[in-house]
Length: 344
Ligand code: MG
Image 1 (cartoon, rainbow, N blue to C red):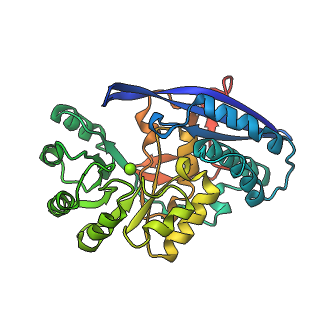
Image 2: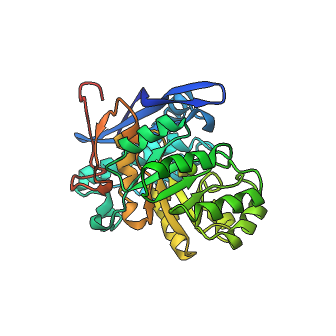
């Protein structure tokens, strides 16, 4: 098997403010695996705050090269990915890029789509949320307009202008909203007050209300919240489900956190075993990683897969949306092809 990779930069349609300046782009690495004329694509997306970079992903891929070079079809997915996982700790996005490319390649060789491989029903896909970031009322109103085609908004809050943000949205639409606090509420009393207020504003769920390690207060909140609470930062990989199963109603599964489709599928099964609801989310990434994640969405209650819609230079064609509903295609593998095949 031949491994090649392409460090790329994705540019946001709307650069956004962060603590020290403005974020206008995000690094990704596209992975290509070739075998007997078949090509599988994968992607690592590395938001700077999670510690991976072009350099770290490339160095991990170089380490993984011998394993992949020696690989022949058919291969044991579980065994190969365990070997990749054991190469080094963390590096979850780099690991995900290999996992995705292996799934895509295997699907191409078998002429089978990845959703078929996981026995998912393509009709059962949820609607994706469309993200509205923290911004001035004018920009928020403009984004609500841009998201006209989508049925559910994902609204980011940070504990500062929360009511202003929600009221601004409610001035222009009564569509349901999923709220993502990104650990932004500092104490449980503030959190329960806000959740009760949000419950009167057609909110369907609240993601990561408190700091990720504060499980004691998460449990306190879980017992009182009228809205389902989802763990995002608190749950990265399969083994974290044990931590959150009794203090959240659901989990946000992202390929870049959990090393890819193989582990994500295991997390889906484990979550269902514990009656946890499932949200499948994403980072800022191209339609390659988005299409990979979408393969598992028939198993999810919610999807937050608008990552590729928010960038200017999507590098792939892949899954599409029909008024926000995820449309899985019948193509083999994860169902993607590069926009410019001369580049990738
Ligand atoms: Mg989140």
